[in-house]
Length: 86
Image 1 (tube, rainbow, N blue to C red):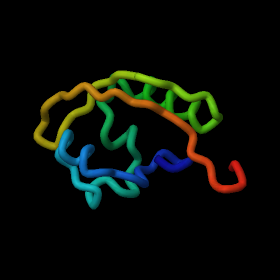
Image 2 (cartoon, helix red, strand yellow; image 1 turned 45 degrees about the horizontal axis):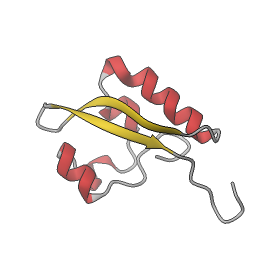
Image 3 (spheres, helix red, strand yellow; image 1 turned 90 degrees about the vertical axis):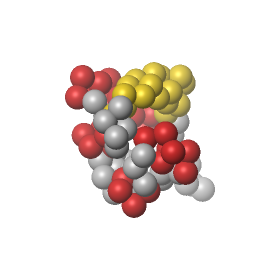
């Protein structure tokens, strides 16, 4: 996700697991659009921390697939930086 929380990368594995294509997810807010309501605050907290450089490994949360099924996702939230370190 980008600094605003919008999906900017959605690979084939993500599509296979949740059923949403990259076209359906790109530019949409990950937490508000795809995370179950009860877990939005905790997932947003992990993403906010990653943006500040505090990375989180193996954070597990449920996600609802396009077909309406619940799947458990394991998230590793890391900060991506450009060539200048920003």
